[in-house]
Length: 533
Image 1 (tube, rainbow, N blue to C red):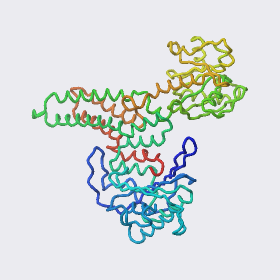
Image 2: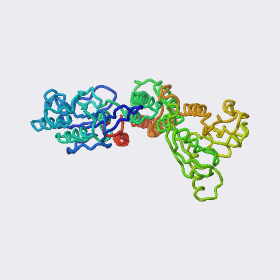
Image 3: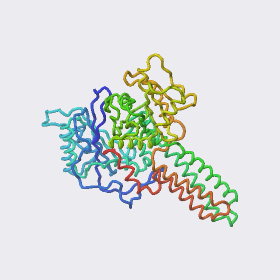
């Protein structure tokens, strides 16, 4: 069971979702529908094996809510009994299963009636404490999973939800869905490929607008269609190459075929290399850009963290060396995800605890995607040379983008220099004045951070879809290596070996979308889904 977050104003009711599946005896496997997605072999075990009915256990604690929803899905066998039970349990058909299809015998009808009473919360016929209930049915193959599905909409109080769970647990053949089982069944029925399933998982976990846009684009199939186009090109090239191997001696295949195959592979390899050289934009947007606040002791690093997250997350003290460990918070900056770390002041420490804090700070600095270098505005000149020397003393990782934050601007008075043009003139990283005490300069800093995050993550709606998963990079790297081996064979190479390299490349692409060798990665893909999705 999953709880939706309340509205921004705090007045929206919380909703609880209880996702359940009702398996029925196996029916003859229908013919696979037309489309690019593969169908699971009927002789192979189901991705969601049936289990002994048990009491449905929610994945999150039950609490007060405005409404609750329970979903059931199962293979089509005439008219799905799960739909009948769902409709009866909701009270929509007033305790009768006839409107939704037959329930197995009197026991099934009794179970449905019991579920109806529990869902309604009735003590007797005159009690309408569960009024305004409803059920929605989605017959296969037009549902999310491709099977017959039904949803119960009931009041979301703890007692009502518990009563529904108890009643549904008594229905024969009903069991709780595994994490990600609904989406895995949709994959098994060809409703979506693995990249779309990963996009759905990312959409559920999206916390910023940019993450939502990227996940939605992947869920709608942009990334999968790109890989399908490459796979189709490889399939054609492999077919032409094998035809040349088999029939070239009979003069049935033109000599230009081999040249066309090499041109196709060369163009595909170039496009694939460009796709891999995206600067990890998709992964950074999905996982969050890791930014580290670094600087000497007592320059306001912890105050900057508290200012950005708008709460006293870090202890602030005028005593130098207060911060000893790494403190991490997740922020939404301009719609981009930022994982911000406050670290110990960088200096030659004598205290063993502070020395360990400095070591951890430097380790985190080496892992940073973005560095916020905080300096004391009263002790450094705003000239490019002075700022560059102060930044070099912090030893940031080479090539890592930096933003210079000159804190304590409120102590400068009216005679202050502006360092904000240093980055624009190409003489150093962008810099800005800030007062963590008064908040002056915060808007300018947020604008700088948004620009840096936009450069690191890009616009997820523009250009080719980005890589979002490390496994995509791994399989694409193996695909590129196979295509490079194909090119290294040259005109005088063994064509049978060259054909095998194309098969390897095509197989690696298929593993990304799930069309080839997906079984060994299915559990990894779906185990991170919440229960009932």
